[in-house]
Structures are given as structure tokens and as C-alpha cells.
Length: 182
Ligand SMILES: Cc1cc2nc3c(=O)[nH]c(=O)nc-3n(C[C@H](O)[C@H](O)[C@H](O)COP(=O)(O)OP(=O)(O)OC[C@H]3O[C@@H](n4cnc5c(N)ncnc54)[C@H](O)[C@@H]3O)c2cc1C
Image (cartoon, rainbow, N blue to C red; front, side, top):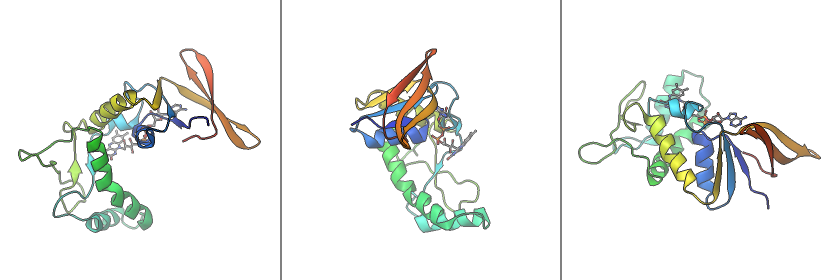
């Protein structure tokens, strides 16, 4: 069976590829070095209810209050609910989040949060540090073919089903056959 193709090597694409390992996947990303992803630019840290005195429900309430009626509560529940697990997964992949002198995660208090729940890596370099860690891990994962500096220009279909992805890399167009694209 053809390998799934993941378009974009930002945090979402890399997490998807690493989560699918050892299933073989291809990741097509525009320059993984430099500022071609929002993920590299993120500075403010990740909010997750990981503190001993915190809870997912409190984080949900704070988010809904800050959203002032604009939030979809089911989406907030889902994203906030997955927060602690996401932090655990990033730690397992080697992201060096900042720690206190006691070795616990250093939790910042920011914005509309009523509890300390914002984790950083190297202060305001959080996105860059996470991306560096995950790119290195993706490069070292045998099931991931990471093609850097690839720009997808077309998703091909045959009889209304995906049949391939065309991308531009090193001055040429290339095509990969696949029936699954993320
Ligand atoms: C300045 C800034 C600060 C931020 N601060 C925070 C913060 O403090 N905390 C927080 O939680 N969030 C923050 N965010 C939001 C956060 O960065 C994004 O929500 C997150 O990075 C999105 O990840 P992503 O993988 O979906 O997108 P991206 O990281 O943007 O990755 C998408 C990738 O797809 C690639 N791509 C697009 N089209 C193609 C194509 N045709 N072919 C190949 N590749 C393609 C792009 O080049 C890019 O590399 C910030 C965003 C910005 C811009």
C-alpha cells in the first residue's frame, strides 16, 4: 500500500508523522530551517492543566470566560482536555521544557488563566525549541521520509479519489503516488 503523505512540516505535520511511527509516511515541508512555519515563531508557551492544583474543567471555564461567548464549548473541551497528554507526549519525544529548581515543570501565569499552566522551553523560544526537537526526531525516525524544502503544488485525483501529490523541490516537479493525504 502507498505511504500516506503529510503536507506541511510544522508542529501539526511532525506530530502526525511521529504519532504514526512505525507506519511509513512521507512528510513534505517547506524549509524546516528558517521561519517558514508559524510553529517556529510561537513564543508565548503552551497552556495545559498540568499543575497539582489545576484541572481540565478549570482550564475550560477560564477559556470560555476569555472567549466571551465566541468559543465552541465542545471544541474547547476537546483541545483543553488533550492538553496534559500533549505535554506528556512532547516530553517523551525529548522537548526540554523549562523546570523549577526542584525539577518540576515551571508553570507560568498569563492572560486570563486563573492557575499557573503555561509551559515554556528556553523562555520565549518555545516554538523554536519544540520544532528543533521534533525535526531532529523525525529525521532520526526510519519510518518517516522527511523531504525538506518541498512545496506541494497539486493533489491529483482519479475518479474523484486521491491518487498522488505533486511537489516542487530543487527546481523540479516530482510526483508521489498515494491515496491518503493529511
Ligand atoms: C508570531 C506567532 C506567535 C505565536 N505564539 C503562540 C504561542 O505562544 N502559543 C501557542 O500555543 N501558539 C502560538 N502561535 C500559534 C501557533 O504557532 C500555531 O497555532 C501552530 O504553530 C500551528 O501549527 P501548524 O503545524 O498547524 O502550522 P505551521 O507551523 O504554520 O506549519 C504549516 C506548514 O505547512 C507548510 N505549507 C503550507 N503550504 C504548503 C505547501 N503547499 N507545500 C508544502 N508545505 C506547505 C508551511 O510552510 C508550514 O511549514 C503563534 C503564531 C505566530 C505566528
